[in-house]
Image (cartoon, rainbow, N blue to C red; front, side):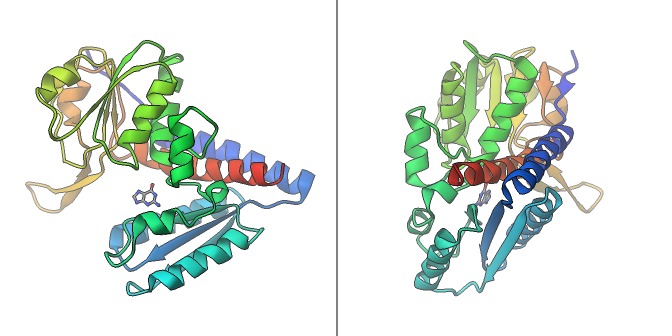
Length: 288
Ligand code: GUN
């Protein structure tokens, strides 16, 4: 069997198109332009790439993009003061503080200082609680993108066995909540899970979000299962240079799976598309 490749790049372009249509309607009908503020502290090269990309796509869908680049030694008080200013700014509907933050900054304190209604990352403790209790919330972008691809591929996910590998607050835990919300039977596996191969072999849906290159081999995958690969890892090529790979071994998994997301071009583009969609949602909620 050869898996269907789930084209996240094309799906994300479609979602961004829908966002752009919505943004145009908000402007024409209500005179409102959704605004997204992104805060980057320090000069982590990967974070700089993400932030640039977010800013570019925000403008492309017609929204206002504001970037705040702060020095790596910015004090917590200064960062909190900036967030307060953005919370109070009626033209800003979404606020994203790029993670990870430098060590001297308390990540939980910073995230929880964002107005939950503007927390387009869905990381604020209020949004985490709302998601966990099945109430309307801001949903973290990466797991939301994964869920959209799964729903698009399968229609209903009800009754499916899903295994999420990885228990991070950004992906693993919210992913599990979303799958549970769609009536999957959900297992969260992690570095201490016993017989991980056996656990993964039971799954109709495997979401790999561990940050370990090519960790999941094809012989862990149940024939016909759907594999969503959240990993983005850069590895050395034998012939020199580097390439991006996911958390699953693509070739061997694609030979067994029913469907699989590639890296790059799978989950990655959906994350930013969902960020833009969350910003429009926040804008609509703010304006009744
Ligand atoms: N760093 C890596 N992924 C993310 C994300 O989804 N949101 C934020 N704010 N920072 C990140």
